[in-house]
Length: 82
Image (cartoon, rainbow, N blue to C red; front, side, top):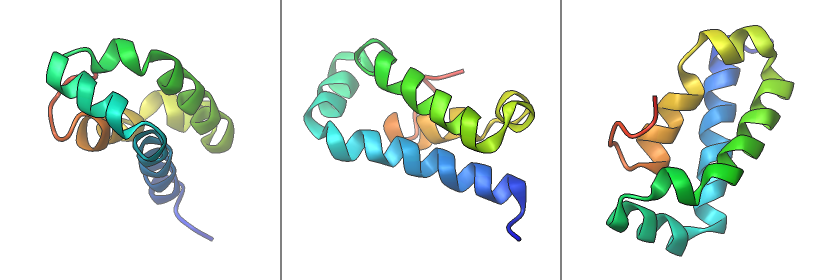
């Protein structure tokens, strides 16, 4: 059985990576214009809901995995998401 923390981190990273795969031009534009949060608002909400459903409310609320994945992957290492 996989460690729940490892599973949560992997799922968060996979969900965020999928956003980039589906919307590479949108991501590039958001990074360029500084509008990443606004451009991906709906995708982030949907991905977080999926994350929460698969991981559970407790881990979703009490760990930084999803936010870290947003900053590392979607924002290219910038600390845009809190």
